[in-house]
Length: 170
Image (cartoon, rainbow, N blue to C red; front, side, top):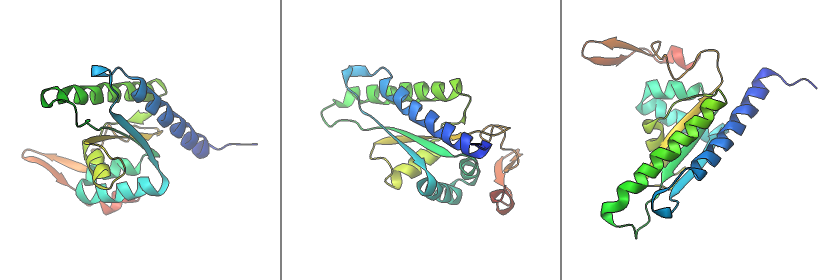
């Protein structure tokens, strides 16, 4: 049997995503209660998220196109948590995210934490949480989430998007 690079990398990234969910679950939690929610998007669901992100944040959408899977990590604050202590749950989310991306880094998977993709995933109902962040994963020769200069131009007054149609085909 010969397993080609594309199939091996896809399977490898899915395995890494699953390990990232374990890392997020076992990350230390404040107040002794776990309020972290996780999911993995692949295939059609990842493509739907990518389409929506391309409409609202083209540069981030382009990066998502380069990924094979997307890890979602969110927090659902229990109703009985006092208002002044809810910030502990958001700290839990940050620790869970750090643990998850550490796992991706250990396994050499390109990744980036994206609030934009997380917000859209939440709006699309992929994770029933109060706050969601997304972590796309890729295995490319050059990190798709680092150097995105081909998608935008830096101007003195901010960013302006170039013609994205040619980049959608990359």
